[in-house]
Image 1 (tube, chains in turn brown, red):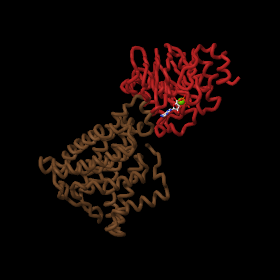
Image 2 (cartoon, rainbow over the protein chains, first blue to last red):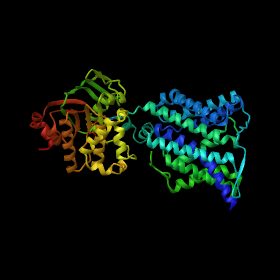
Image 3 (cartoon, rainbow over the protein chains, first blue to last red):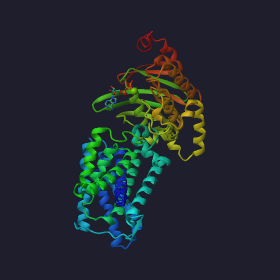
Image 4 (cartoon, rainbow over the protein chains, first blue to last red):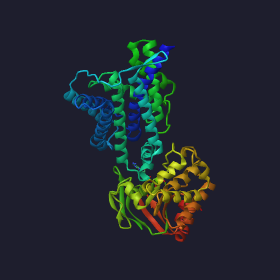
Amino acid sequence: MDLFFQQVLNGLTLGGVYCLVALGLTLVYGVLHVPNFAHGAFYMAGAFVSFHLMTAWGWPYWLAMLGSAACVALLAVLAERLVFHPLRHASPLHPMIAAIGVLLFLEAAAQAIWGADFQRMQSPYTGIVDLAGVTAPVQRLLIIGAAFALVVIVHLFLTRTVTGSTIVAMAQTREGAALVGINANRVAMLTFALSGVLAAVAATLYAPINLVYPAMGHLVITKAFVIIILGGMGSVPGAIAGGLIIGLAESFGAFYVSDHYKDIIAFTLLVVILSLRPQGLFPNAAR
Amino acid sequence: MLAFENVSLNYGSFRALDEVSLHANEGELVVLLGANGAGKSSIFLAASGLQKACAGSIRYGDCQLVGMKPSRIVEQGVVQCPEGRKLFPGMSVMKNLMLGAYVHRRDKTGNRKRLDEVMALFPVLEHKQNDPAGSLSGGQQQMVAIGRALMGRPKVLLLDEPSLGLAPLVVKQVFEVISQINRAGTTVLLAEQNAFAALKIAHRAYVLERGRIVLEGDRDSLMSNEAIRKAYIGT
Ligand SMILES: Nc1ncnc2c1ncn2[C@@H]1O[C@H](COP(=O)(O)OP(=O)(O)OP(=O)(O)O)[C@@H](O)[C@H]1O
Ligand SMILES: [Mg+2]
């Protein structure tokens, strides 16, 4: 039983990180219909900026996370302005190719600045607590708590504030949004900034129990795509539910099936679920 | 108040509007008649800045609307209730209405007053205010769409085929409300295929064919026009 709860804990950790990454990806897709392959590079950049702020500048962990969120938000807005905005009337293939370009550019830049080596980020939270027989590293509990808090904050932002509603409005009916006077450019920038913040926070949360390196975004972004396809492209609840499903499935799969197959579990699930529900779990909920 | 002068609009190489000139004076209810594909929606899209006119001018008071951003046009008081409604289907009726007041979002008291007026105009929406707009019947959705446009405090209201797909009884209600909005002082430009019902509440009308104005006149002259009766009224 303890082993079972251990897997739940691990699954929630992974799920929390996946939720944050997938949420940003699905928002950008919902508003701009761009499958942003560069989102994984935002994630990677978030980890490196935090790492840099902590090791080179001696910033404390949480402050570094804030700094990284601000930097990656700026980076995401720049990508929107310089790359995706000029392509908004082009055929859908163009922004896709451009997104891959941004991804390659950011990875090369990270490698040039920080090198290709694996780096370890030190978190101040190295302790372990014992929760009724389940050993829980503090960092994992922190990931779960912070990720879910952030998901709730984003949800409240989207549903309770006028600014957040403009994002949802544009995702639901682009033309309707323009006709009530919502500025599409502002919403596009805002959405990219939000996706950057989420990616940076996710990366900074997860990095201390993982490694930091230029290609670290690859696996995360492919899983995030699986999640949003599973949840319904552009759907916010879909991204959250999908993130948790994939996180838990991987953790249980790694333990009860085999650790070697951990990374294909997401894709297997994708195939199974889409063959049963081709429209995804939440086809047009809250888009 | 709103005046098109020789406005042309292309979709690629297809000319949807060809030197269209029309105007609506302050307080008027002007109807645009035309068959499917005549270019009615294109006129509205050009006025709202969602499609760029390639020639001509669209003047509103002292402003030139051609080249102005859609959000600026709404701020000026030219608000459109589009064909197909374009509501936010997943949001509640209330939220749809409040987003209609987006450009006035800082004036909370003004919006509340406006909301009361809209609710008075469409009492059925009162009970539905927390339902997702997408779950309402067609007629109710049309009311939300008109209500949302009114929340933008239009000086000129552009209504694109508000009767499309509605039951006859609901159509009658909708036209009654439009007439009421106009009598309360809002200038209305109304695109319709339902010529008889539209002309009844109109001051003047234009007839559009393949992107050109082919006929214009006041209500009575068009009502008694043989060609109009044949083509659009069917008597
Ligand atoms: N986005 C577009 N791209 C290409 N052609 C278009 C586009 N929108 C409209 N058209 C064409 O322009 C012409 C005018 O269309 P418009 O929608 O303005 O007509 P309408 O009078 O509103 O018709 P309806 O009564 O069907 O709404 C039509 O022939 C239509 O096929
Ligand atoms: Mg039309």
